[in-house]
Amino acid sequence: MAEEHYLELSENPVQFEHASSVNNVFFDEANKQVFAVRSGGATGVVVKGPDDKSSVAFRMDDKGEVKCIKFSIGNKILAVQRTSKSVDFINFIPDYPHTEFSQECKTKNANILGFCWTNWNEIVFITDQGIEFYQVFPDKRSLKLLKSQSINVNWYQYCPETAVILLSTTVQGNILQPFAFRNGTMCKMSKFEIELPVVPKPAKLSLSERDIAMATMYGQLYVMYLKHHSRTANSPSAEVVLYHLSREGSCKKSHVLKLNTTGKFALNIVDNLVVVHHQSSQRLPARHHHQRQRR
Image 1 (cartoon, rainbow, N blue to C red):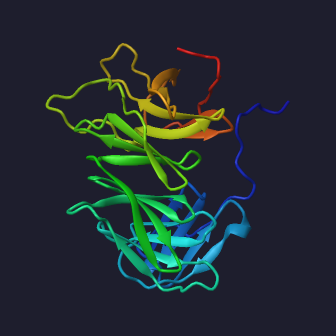
Image 2 (cartoon, rainbow, N blue to C red):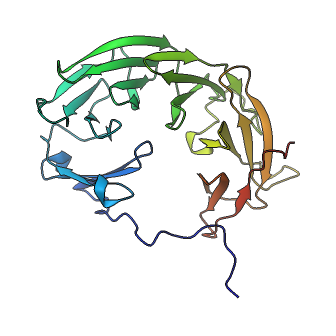
Protein backbone atom coordinates (compact mmCIF):
# COMPACT_ATOMS: atom_id res chain seq x y z
CA MET A 1 0.00 0.00 0.00
CA ALA A 2 1.46 3.33 -1.04
CA GLU A 3 2.20 5.85 1.67
CA GLU A 4 -0.39 8.62 1.80
CA HIS A 5 0.84 12.16 1.30
CA TYR A 6 -0.49 15.67 0.73
CA LEU A 7 2.13 16.93 -1.71
CA GLU A 8 4.67 15.63 -4.18
CA LEU A 9 7.54 17.32 -5.97
CA SER A 10 7.17 18.13 -9.65
CA GLU A 11 8.85 15.78 -12.09
CA ASN A 12 10.00 18.83 -14.07
CA PRO A 13 11.74 21.19 -11.62
CA VAL A 14 12.87 24.66 -12.71
CA GLN A 15 16.64 24.47 -13.07
CA PHE A 16 18.84 27.58 -12.92
CA GLU A 17 22.40 28.62 -12.11
CA HIS A 18 22.91 28.89 -8.37
CA ALA A 19 23.63 32.19 -6.66
CA SER A 20 27.31 33.15 -6.55
CA SER A 21 29.62 36.17 -6.59
CA VAL A 22 28.89 36.67 -10.31
CA ASN A 23 25.30 35.39 -10.47
CA ASN A 24 22.33 36.84 -8.57
CA VAL A 25 19.06 34.91 -8.35
CA PHE A 26 15.60 36.47 -7.91
CA PHE A 27 12.09 35.03 -7.74
CA ASP A 28 9.00 36.88 -8.91
CA GLU A 29 5.94 35.56 -7.07
CA ALA A 30 3.46 37.19 -9.45
CA ASN A 31 4.70 35.57 -12.67
CA LYS A 32 6.29 32.55 -10.93
CA GLN A 33 9.60 33.33 -12.64
CA VAL A 34 13.20 32.74 -11.54
CA PHE A 35 15.75 35.31 -12.76
CA ALA A 36 19.45 34.43 -12.98
CA VAL A 37 21.37 37.68 -13.52
CA ARG A 38 25.06 37.28 -14.42
CA SER A 39 27.42 40.24 -13.96
CA GLY A 40 24.59 42.74 -13.61
CA GLY A 41 23.07 41.42 -16.84
CA ALA A 42 26.09 42.14 -19.06
CA THR A 43 26.85 38.46 -19.60
CA GLY A 44 23.22 37.38 -19.63
CA VAL A 45 19.86 37.23 -17.87
CA VAL A 46 18.00 33.92 -17.96
CA VAL A 47 14.33 33.88 -16.93
CA LYS A 48 12.54 30.58 -16.32
CA GLY A 49 8.97 29.83 -15.31
CA PRO A 50 6.92 26.72 -14.54
CA ASP A 51 7.01 25.68 -18.21
CA ASP A 52 9.56 25.97 -21.01
CA LYS A 53 7.36 28.37 -23.01
CA SER A 54 7.93 31.13 -20.47
CA SER A 55 11.73 30.99 -20.68
CA VAL A 56 13.46 34.19 -21.80
CA ALA A 57 17.17 35.00 -22.25
CA PHE A 58 18.68 38.42 -22.96
CA ARG A 59 21.47 40.80 -22.05
CA MET A 60 21.40 44.29 -20.57
CA ASP A 61 24.02 46.89 -19.70
CA ASP A 62 25.71 46.49 -16.33
CA LYS A 63 24.71 49.70 -14.52
CA GLY A 64 25.30 48.45 -11.02
CA GLU A 65 24.11 45.69 -8.72
CA VAL A 66 20.54 44.57 -9.37
CA LYS A 67 18.39 44.76 -6.22
CA CYS A 68 15.10 43.63 -7.78
CA ILE A 69 13.97 42.56 -11.27
CA LYS A 70 10.47 41.65 -12.51
CA PHE A 71 8.51 41.45 -15.75
CA SER A 72 5.08 43.00 -16.02
CA ILE A 73 2.20 40.64 -16.82
CA GLY A 74 2.81 38.98 -20.17
CA ASN A 75 6.55 39.81 -20.16
CA LYS A 76 5.78 43.13 -21.87
CA ILE A 77 7.95 45.49 -19.78
CA LEU A 78 10.96 44.68 -17.60
CA ALA A 79 11.52 46.68 -14.41
CA VAL A 80 14.95 46.70 -12.76
CA GLN A 81 15.83 48.37 -9.46
CA ARG A 82 19.53 49.15 -9.02
CA THR A 83 19.39 52.03 -6.52
CA SER A 84 17.15 53.10 -3.65
CA LYS A 85 15.98 56.15 -5.58
CA SER A 86 14.80 54.93 -9.01
CA VAL A 87 13.58 52.00 -11.15
CA ASP A 88 14.70 51.37 -14.74
CA PHE A 89 12.44 50.00 -17.49
CA ILE A 90 13.06 48.12 -20.75
CA ASN A 91 10.39 47.45 -23.39
CA PHE A 92 9.93 43.86 -24.55
CA ILE A 93 6.91 44.68 -26.73
CA PRO A 94 7.66 43.94 -30.42
CA ASP A 95 8.43 47.03 -32.56
CA TYR A 96 8.88 49.22 -29.47
CA PRO A 97 12.25 50.87 -28.71
CA HIS A 98 14.40 48.57 -26.56
CA THR A 99 16.31 51.41 -24.89
CA GLU A 100 16.06 51.85 -21.12
CA PHE A 101 14.10 54.61 -19.41
CA SER A 102 13.98 55.45 -15.72
CA GLN A 103 11.65 56.81 -13.03
CA GLU A 104 12.74 58.32 -9.73
CA CYS A 105 10.45 58.15 -6.72
CA LYS A 106 8.59 61.42 -6.20
CA THR A 107 8.87 61.59 -2.42
CA LYS A 108 11.88 63.62 -1.32
CA ASN A 109 14.49 61.73 0.71
CA ALA A 110 12.51 58.47 0.38
CA ASN A 111 14.16 55.10 -0.28
CA ILE A 112 12.50 52.52 -2.53
CA LEU A 113 12.02 49.22 -0.68
CA GLY A 114 10.70 47.46 -3.79
CA PHE A 115 8.00 47.51 -6.46
CA CYS A 116 5.00 45.47 -7.63
CA TRP A 117 3.38 45.22 -11.05
CA THR A 118 -0.42 45.37 -10.65
CA ASN A 119 -1.16 45.30 -14.40
CA TRP A 120 0.84 44.99 -17.60
CA ASN A 121 1.39 48.79 -17.58
CA GLU A 122 0.75 49.72 -13.93
CA ILE A 123 3.35 49.58 -11.17
CA VAL A 124 3.59 50.52 -7.49
CA PHE A 125 6.79 51.81 -5.86
CA ILE A 126 6.91 51.02 -2.13
CA THR A 127 9.18 53.40 -0.24
CA ASP A 128 9.98 53.82 3.43
CA GLN A 129 7.70 56.87 3.37
CA GLY A 130 4.68 55.51 1.46
CA ILE A 131 3.57 54.18 -1.92
CA GLU A 132 3.51 55.67 -5.42
CA PHE A 133 1.16 54.25 -8.09
CA TYR A 134 2.24 54.79 -11.72
CA GLN A 135 1.00 54.10 -15.23
CA VAL A 136 3.75 53.16 -17.68
CA PHE A 137 3.66 54.42 -21.28
CA PRO A 138 6.07 52.13 -23.19
CA ASP A 139 5.68 54.03 -26.48
CA LYS A 140 6.62 57.35 -24.85
CA ARG A 141 9.14 55.69 -22.50
CA SER A 142 7.68 57.57 -19.54
CA LEU A 143 5.53 57.11 -16.43
CA LYS A 144 2.57 59.06 -15.03
CA LEU A 145 1.89 59.24 -11.27
CA LEU A 146 -1.73 58.17 -10.72
CA LYS A 147 -1.87 58.34 -6.93
CA SER A 148 0.36 58.34 -3.88
CA GLN A 149 -0.04 57.85 -0.14
CA SER A 150 2.32 59.02 2.60
CA ILE A 151 2.83 56.50 5.42
CA ASN A 152 5.88 55.24 7.32
CA VAL A 153 6.70 51.74 6.02
CA ASN A 154 8.93 49.07 7.59
CA TRP A 155 8.36 46.37 4.97
CA TYR A 156 5.65 45.10 2.62
CA GLN A 157 3.99 41.98 1.22
CA TYR A 158 2.09 41.58 -2.06
CA CYS A 159 -0.65 39.17 -3.12
CA PRO A 160 -0.68 39.08 -6.95
CA GLU A 161 -3.95 37.12 -7.19
CA THR A 162 -5.87 39.99 -5.57
CA ALA A 163 -3.46 42.89 -6.33
CA VAL A 164 -3.35 43.81 -2.62
CA ILE A 165 -0.23 45.31 -1.02
CA LEU A 166 0.20 45.02 2.76
CA LEU A 167 2.36 47.61 4.52
CA SER A 168 3.92 47.19 7.96
CA THR A 169 3.66 50.47 9.89
CA THR A 170 4.39 51.94 13.34
CA VAL A 171 7.52 51.36 15.46
CA GLN A 172 6.63 47.78 16.39
CA GLY A 173 5.54 46.99 12.83
CA ASN A 174 2.35 45.18 13.88
CA ILE A 175 -0.16 47.67 12.46
CA LEU A 176 -0.76 46.48 8.90
CA GLN A 177 -2.25 48.75 6.23
CA PRO A 178 -3.57 47.07 3.05
CA PHE A 179 -4.12 48.79 -0.32
CA ALA A 180 -6.04 47.25 -3.23
CA PHE A 181 -5.36 48.06 -6.90
CA ARG A 182 -7.65 47.56 -9.88
CA ASN A 183 -7.82 49.14 -13.35
CA GLY A 184 -5.87 52.28 -12.51
CA THR A 185 -7.47 52.82 -9.10
CA MET A 186 -5.99 52.51 -5.61
CA CYS A 187 -8.22 51.76 -2.61
CA LYS A 188 -7.10 52.15 0.99
CA MET A 189 -8.53 49.26 3.02
CA SER A 190 -9.07 49.06 6.79
CA LYS A 191 -5.86 48.73 8.78
CA PHE A 192 -5.60 46.08 11.49
CA GLU A 193 -3.34 45.00 14.32
CA ILE A 194 -1.41 41.76 14.69
CA GLU A 195 -1.41 40.59 18.32
CA LEU A 196 2.22 40.17 19.40
CA PRO A 197 3.08 37.43 21.94
CA VAL A 198 5.29 39.90 23.82
CA VAL A 199 5.15 43.71 23.69
CA PRO A 200 8.74 45.01 23.89
CA LYS A 201 9.75 47.92 26.13
CA PRO A 202 11.04 50.23 24.85
CA ALA A 203 9.14 49.77 21.61
CA LYS A 204 11.08 48.32 18.67
CA LEU A 205 10.34 46.54 15.38
CA SER A 206 8.92 43.19 16.51
CA LEU A 207 6.97 41.85 13.52
CA SER A 208 9.14 40.49 10.73
CA GLU A 209 8.06 40.13 7.10
CA ARG A 210 9.29 36.51 7.33
CA ASP A 211 6.42 35.81 9.72
CA ILE A 212 3.67 37.24 7.50
CA ALA A 213 2.26 35.77 4.28
CA MET A 214 -0.78 36.56 2.13
CA ALA A 215 -2.82 34.08 0.13
CA THR A 216 -6.24 33.37 -1.30
CA MET A 217 -8.14 30.33 -0.05
CA TYR A 218 -11.58 29.40 -1.32
CA GLY A 219 -11.66 32.74 -3.11
CA GLN A 220 -11.04 34.75 0.08
CA LEU A 221 -7.94 36.76 0.98
CA TYR A 222 -6.12 35.83 4.19
CA VAL A 223 -3.14 37.20 6.05
CA MET A 224 -1.18 34.46 7.81
CA TYR A 225 0.88 35.26 10.89
CA LEU A 226 3.52 32.77 12.03
CA LYS A 227 3.37 33.31 15.78
CA HIS A 228 6.37 32.22 17.86
CA HIS A 229 5.66 31.95 21.58
CA SER A 230 8.35 32.79 24.12
CA ARG A 231 10.05 29.88 25.86
CA THR A 232 8.40 30.81 29.16
CA ALA A 233 4.89 30.69 27.67
CA ASN A 234 2.45 27.95 28.65
CA SER A 235 2.13 26.86 25.01
CA PRO A 236 5.67 26.94 23.60
CA SER A 237 4.76 25.56 20.17
CA ALA A 238 4.33 27.92 17.23
CA GLU A 239 1.01 28.75 15.61
CA VAL A 240 -0.27 30.06 12.29
CA VAL A 241 -2.91 32.70 12.94
CA LEU A 242 -5.20 33.46 9.98
CA TYR A 243 -6.81 36.87 9.54
CA HIS A 244 -9.61 37.18 6.98
CA LEU A 245 -9.10 40.36 4.96
CA SER A 246 -12.20 41.64 3.16
CA ARG A 247 -12.18 44.55 0.73
CA GLU A 248 -15.00 46.12 2.69
CA GLY A 249 -15.21 46.02 6.45
CA SER A 250 -12.63 45.19 9.10
CA CYS A 251 -10.08 42.40 9.16
CA LYS A 252 -10.94 39.61 11.60
CA LYS A 253 -8.96 36.75 13.12
CA SER A 254 -10.62 33.58 11.85
CA HIS A 255 -8.44 30.52 12.51
CA VAL A 256 -5.49 29.34 14.63
CA LEU A 257 -3.47 26.40 13.31
CA LYS A 258 -1.30 24.79 16.00
CA LEU A 259 2.01 23.40 14.69
CA ASN A 260 3.01 21.41 17.80
CA THR A 261 6.66 22.26 17.22
CA THR A 262 9.08 25.19 17.26
CA GLY A 263 11.88 26.46 15.03
CA LYS A 264 12.20 28.19 11.68
CA PHE A 265 9.29 27.93 9.27
CA ALA A 266 8.11 29.09 5.86
CA LEU A 267 4.53 29.25 4.60
CA ASN A 268 2.91 28.34 1.28
CA ILE A 269 -0.61 27.74 0.02
CA VAL A 270 -1.24 24.85 -2.38
CA ASP A 271 -4.82 24.05 -3.44
CA ASN A 272 -6.35 25.72 -0.34
CA LEU A 273 -3.91 23.82 1.89
CA VAL A 274 -1.65 25.71 4.30
CA VAL A 275 1.80 24.15 3.92
CA VAL A 276 4.33 24.87 6.67
CA HIS A 277 7.98 24.12 5.88
CA HIS A 278 9.89 23.19 9.04
CA GLN A 279 13.59 23.78 8.44
CA SER A 280 15.23 21.75 11.20
CA SER A 281 13.19 18.56 10.68
CA GLN A 282 12.89 19.08 6.89
CA ARG A 283 9.23 18.15 7.18
CA LEU A 284 6.03 19.72 5.82
CA PRO A 285 3.33 19.72 8.51
CA ALA A 286 0.34 20.56 6.30
CA ARG A 287 -2.84 22.00 7.77
CA HIS A 288 -6.23 22.01 6.10
CA HIS A 289 -8.12 25.30 6.03
CA HIS A 290 -11.81 24.44 6.21
CA GLN A 291 -14.35 27.12 5.39
CA ARG A 292 -16.62 26.15 8.24
CA GLN A 293 -14.04 25.70 10.96
CA ARG A 294 -13.98 28.80 13.13
CA ARG A 295 -12.22 29.72 16.31
